[in-house]
Length: 295
Image 1 (tube, rainbow, N blue to C red):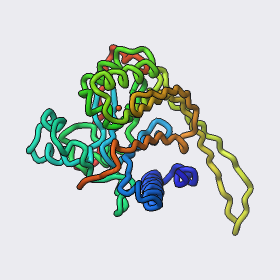
Image 2 (image 1 turned 45 degrees about the vertical axis):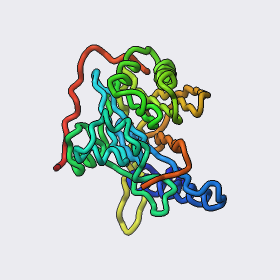
Image 3 (image 1 turned 180 degrees about the vertical axis):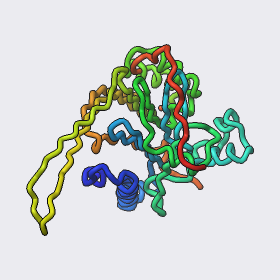
């Protein structure tokens, strides 16, 4: 993630594109170094929070969900064969889970052609692509929950089941563990990665404006330097599972808005590429975000 480390947090889309390209090239180079690794790849989901604004990008079939006011919304669109079939009305979501091509993905890190990160952030299922991209920079609200996960979770749990597990647990750690345990109980045939991020219920963005009148005299002109400092605190629970083993980690993050990337990269179950709590959700309901921009 050298691209992120070099970034000042202003050109977020360009930074994410650079980071995805670097990661893909690194995976491709590693695969080329060993004949046994030929065809290896990875999926990727990214949530970058700047102040209280959410920016997302993804490659493959790992997912990002937003949980708000008792509703769960998948923000991403799977880059998979079965998703294309669902979009065209050839398959139903129920039938897609049992289809032989369920794990055939269309985009992945390490591919011969550099993958293009997807910046659609879908707040509604029937939303147009351009409208979904215009949702980037979505304002997060108190008690919002973000879930980043691999298909090892979503292959085995429906969205409403994921929501129910998260709503029923008092902490990020317990919700993450419960999601993984339920997926394992149903077979656990794939890697399971779960990242849960919650916005504190009492969260309030604080912007401090410090105006420094410096006597910079250049060609008879003075410069006014406006320094903006923004700090935010998010609680994050990260769990990942490979085989039957489960690695658990709970982290509390305090960070500046220009350095709040959360990235999970999950390798697929095989090396062949053919063609997923926090705070209980308050009983009061916050209106779902209204789309802006043009479709």
